[in-house]
Amino acid sequence: MTEHTASPATSTLEGAPSLFSTAFDLRSVGYVTEELLCSGIATSCAGETAPFTTRLVVYRPEDPGRGNGAAVVEWLNVSGGFDVPAVWMTTHRHLVREGFTWMGVTAQRVGIHGGGGVLPESGLRVSDPERYSTLAHPGDEFAFDVFTQAGRVVRERFGGERLLATGESQSSLYLVSYLNEVSPTAGMFDGYLLVGRPGGAAPLDGSFTLVLGEPRLAGAVRIRDDLATPVLVVQSETDLLGRLGYYPARQPDGDCFRLWEVAGSAHCDTYFLLAAALDSGALSAGDLARLVLAADEPLGMPTSLPINSGPQMHFVLHAALHHLDQWVGDGSAPPGADRLVVRDDADGPAFVLDEHDNVLGGVRSPWVDAPIATLSGLGQPGDLAQLFGTSTPFDAATLDRLYPGGVTDFGSRFDAATDHAVASGFLLAADADEIKALGRAMYVVCST
Image (spheres, rainbow, N blue to C red):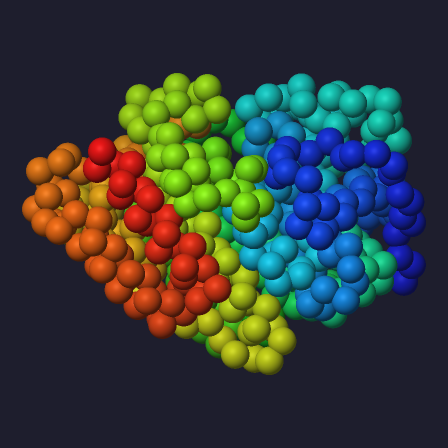
């Protein structure tokens, strides 16, 4: 891939962008929204060139003085057939609190032209042809360079001093290839957060297509160990032993690599599906608890079992972004984490569970160390639904046995587990009070 001497051309697209995102008005938290058209010439890894015009969505502090100098550049996820800012949805509370600039990049062809994912007729030119008529994507073999050029835009136009690239699920599949094949010469991003990555990597020729029901994401592709750029990978139980098949790609920590595997977590949970869009920071603990515990039929999508209702991934990803930005800024590396405990059986790898059937090891949180339910990233039937994991709430007798003093006993244990996770670096002190209040509210809902 060749170096570019000219920056891509950008122009502002007036009006509200078409993007599945947070539902509250960002102005209420001091942020503004911009949508840009971005045009240039992209180069594939094979050396071919083609023109492109894509769109970039930017959320940034309305008061520039609130900015912290860092920009998170997200490879928007198109597994649904349309752009989804998966990392923004889970981490926006931290990004807004700390004054990050966030940019979502429509990096893949599906996001513009449709033709893939769960809803293949949902690309921008399909869903809003008048607004997005000038968009054009030459193919996913050019997506890597489109993403690099988007990074140049945020650095030059918005003054990003530290650029953190991120993506979740299929997007991280592409970022694995970007890291291993593109980043050493592109040199655009200062750090990477990969969330829910499959074990494989996207082909550089743009030939990957997502087909539900086929285990095409699994593999044993590791992040190269000679990179000088910090990389933090955060994985759920689903990612490790579910359809995404990350387990063979598991790798040890290194000078510029950290892996966090989060106990009790699923690839997609109720916080993401039900709470994130509404969570401006103004919700009460009780309201947030009722949202994350509505695990039976999220968004009208029936599942065979209640889906994972543990919100720990949301809070752990806050800590992950904090540590990655610090790692880039002053060289302070994130804490290393124990791996989830896995045994290799005759039928394949399986998690080792505690007395409550919650997994042992990994990044711990109060939702597994002071539990009110069995939380798993596995066990949900269905091609898409299996990504949601399961929740099995404890019955009244179990809650009484574990916490004979009711909410007082529970709160004491939950608080201690929260404080331990904060001290270990996997939760943030800034979130501790909210976590403790939310834990109590969830206990009250589940025990009444």
